[in-house]
Image (cartoon, rainbow, N blue to C red; front, side):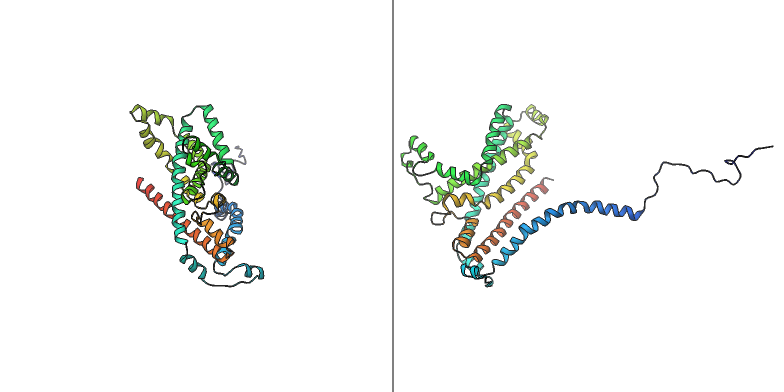
Length: 329
C-alpha cells in the first residue's frame, strides 16, 4: 500500500521558485520618481532665483522705466510721473557719452592687463617659495585683499597727498625735487595713475591666490618630464602650466573685467571724476548726471546704457574664448 503525501499529491501546485529578481515596479510610479528627481535641482534653486528676481530684477525694471521719464527734484517732491519718451537717451548721445565709453573701456583694459600679469607673476612665485615664505606672502596678500575699499582709497589719498604724502617725500629724496609738492590729482594722467595703482593693488591678491591654488592641481611628474626633455622655465610655463590654467585665466579675466568696469568708490573718492570731469567713467558719469545734477531720468538712462555696454563687452570676450576652445578641440 503506497502512502501519498500532500506535497506529492496528484494535481498539487508546486511552490514558486525564488529567482532573486525584484518584483516588477509600477511604470507610472517609476516615471513619477524620475520626474521628482529631475525637478529637485530646480526646486532647490527656486529660493535663490526668487530672491534675485526681487532684489535685482525689480530694481532693473524700475530703473528702465525711469529712463523714459523726466524725473527732477520737482517731480520727485510732488510725486509726479512725467513720461518723455527717448528724450533722455537723445540728450545723452548728444553729450559726452561716447567719449566716456571710450575712456571707460581703455581704463578697464589697462587695469585688467596689469592685474592679470602681476597676479600671475605673484601666483607663480607662491608656487616656487618655501613653506614659511609662502605663508608670509599669502598672509600679506590676504590682508591687502581684506582691506575695505573706502579704507584703501583713504590710505592712497594720504600716500599721494601733495603736501605730506609719502610718494612725494620718497621721490624728492631720490632726486626728483620737482615732485616735492606735486599735485597727483591735478591732471587726468596723474589722477588715473593713482586710481590704477589702487585698483591693481586691491585686485592682484585675488588673482595670485587663485592661480597658486590652481597650480597645486598640476601633477609634478609633468614638470619633471619637461625638465628631463630640456625645457626651460618659459617652455615649462607655456607647454605645461598654461594649458592647465587656461580655464582659470578665462574665468578670472571675465570677473576682473566686470569688477574694474563698474568700479565706483575708487574713482569717486580720489577726485570725484575730476579734474574737469576728465576721469569720469560710466558709473561716475551716471551718478554725476543723476544725483549730482538731480536729473534722475538721465542718470537711469546712462545706467541702462552702461549695462548694455558691459554685456556687449563680456559677450564679445566670451565669444572669443569659446572660439579659441573650439579651435583647440
